[in-house]
Amino acid sequence: MSVTVASTAASSIERAVDDIIKQCGGISPNTVLFFASSRYDPASISRAMHDAFSGAQVIGCSTAGEIVSGRVMKDSIVAMAFDDRTIESVACSVVTDVASPDSLADAVRDLEEKIGTPLRDLDFQKYVGIILIDGLSGSEERVMDRLGDLTDVTFIGGSAGDDLNFQSTYVYLDGAAYTNAAVLALLKPVGEFDIIKTQSFRTLDTVLVPTKVNEERREVLEFNNMPAALAYARAVGVSVKEAPKRFMHNPVGLVTGDDFFVRSPRQIEGDSIFFYCMVKEGMELALLESTDIIEDTHNAVEEKVRQLGRASALINFHCILRALELEEKGQSAEYGSLFADIPTIGFSTYGEEYIGHINQTSTMLIFK
Amino acid sequence: MAGKIKQMIEKIIEERSNGNEVLKSTTRTKLIIKGYNPDTWTSRSEDDPTKIAELKQIARDMGVNL
Image (tube, rainbow over all chains, first blue to last red; front, side):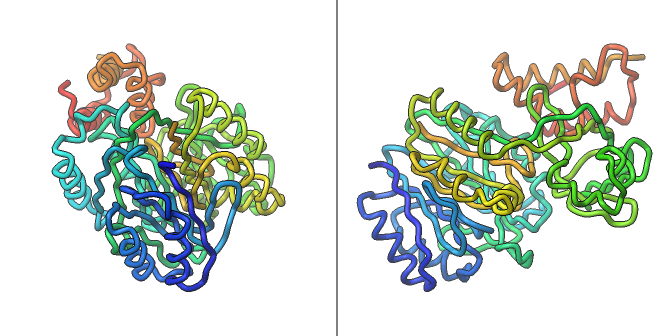
């Protein structure tokens, strides 16, 4: 076995980490990825996991719910350990201040020194990046945008959560816990790997163009030269007061050819709508309508496994809004069961990363 | 004058993708996320100096010589 999955709901960090060590007993990992509920003290869990796997690069983050092969969990820790039969090499760095371009530049330089090659020169078919980033920083777009400028390597990941407390989120590297930060991990897998990006919406004919925005605040003041809240309410056929009830089922999507990147409205304030990610003035955004998460996810995973021939591991960055919708519909267990036959870990995120920053999506890294 | 923005966008995509279809698609997506959808600009689009300056900066950031 070159990949091992572990999970625990033990409440003490000592017992929880002991549980994970026992479940990972058959492997000498070079890389350990873990996702831990915010009920575990950040500094303590990062230190304990690092000490438990001292020969490995240990990275992780806080969550708003966890996923492990076949099960959706809460208040737990899930971990995946890889050895050199799956991950040939790994290099990690931390962006200590996600709001600072200099901090990102330092982290990239650190990665480049570790691998001895500029990120720009790396073969995107041989390397893949994982990014775990503070989910309350509001900085994901800028970090992803700059990373995309610097490299063709795909960085996939999620925004850390804190079990819907919205107080502080953490990323973990080398035994330390960081907030307002991001961890970058550059992996060189031994075999094939691929990305799944799945969201359960179809595009409608209605297009909303932001004509006045405040990008920094993720605020749209006007759509189609009308007050944003009014334009959105009209588009979905309800009053402004009723409009927030439609946010989850009718977000908007930035169409990119055959695909789209979901932008989810968060709340109405005055005439404005605040989003969970930035939208730019002049972007054409299609109104979306929700479809079936279980069916769409099943199809997306099955198709990718079919293309690869098999799946030895899967990491699922699963939007908290999708998790809440599944919970509301009583489908969480069914969702978990979609991953019963694949060694899987994942967590409920405050945002998903793939090329850019996305909402109401699952981004997954799958290894053959 | 018209069409310069379309030309710049196409040049960025060509340079960054180096003929690779996957990278072509990814670079297009990156540009769309930055607010420059290649499909909305044509050879008849007006040469807006502000947009041209923005695209020059994007090209520099992406390591492309226009």
